[in-house]
Amino acid sequence: MIMIDRMIEQALLEDIHTGDITTKAVVPQRRPAEARLIAKEDLVVAGLSIAGRVFSRLDPDVVFRSNCSEGDHLAKGTVMATLSGDAADLLMGERVALNLLQRMCGIATLTSRFVEAVSGTKARIVDTRKTTPGLREIEKYAVRIGGGINHRTGLYDGVLIKENHIAAAGGITEAIRRARAYIPHTLKIEIETETLEQVDEALAAGADIIMLDNMTLDQMRKAVAVIAGRAVVEASGGVNLDTVRGIAETGVDIISVGALTHSPRAMDISMLLD
Image (cartoon, rainbow, N blue to C red; front, side, top):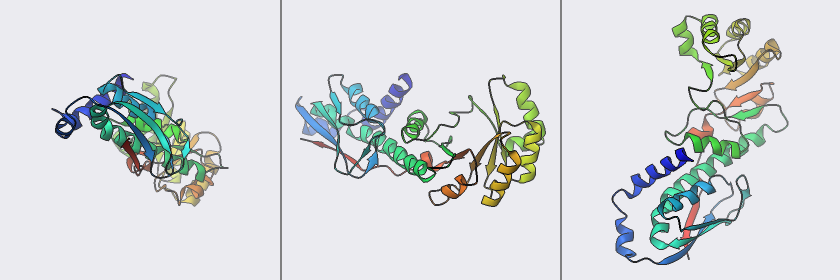
């Protein structure tokens, strides 16, 4: 929560800065108020606790009551939460709370659609590091709420050898050798491949996870057959809601989708004072 609070405080500082001049002018005295957060379209809930924490950082006496749980599928018009507290605090926290809540619900909703699209296959939907700077923790949380799985959080908690690493090391075999010699036994090595020949080399070098990057469906099927369970198979590149089912049916284990966090549509949610 320390990281979350820092993120919220930075967002509030960015928005309020030296003071909310509109609220100071229009609502100069303390005045009790109540408000509702309303879903303006169907969505999957993620981030209500974060939204509530925005208001509590402004005033610990604000009461935030959730009417639903994380992961719930809501219909348009549902009252997601009610708030009560000083009107000025509710007004000052409104935009930051909505920005975070709308984005998190957008990620969870999009993720749930991808998860549903591959239902019945063994493929799992995972995210990437293509997140909004400063918001990675909550964006990856929203992916989990939507039914997806987190890939590595950052550069520090997983080995993923990509094409530029391969080029710098002098080849796939050498890159994997160096990584294996450096890391503890508790970490696995993933490597990116673009051809079936590279898949063969990665297997021979002992990769634990092999990423099939921008391969055709036919190439993916052949790669899955060649790997034959000796490594986890990840598909990446060109993944969208129109293509993900076909990719899943090739037999890959996981499908990474950058769009979950780099281009979700913010859900339409409003806050209305009563």
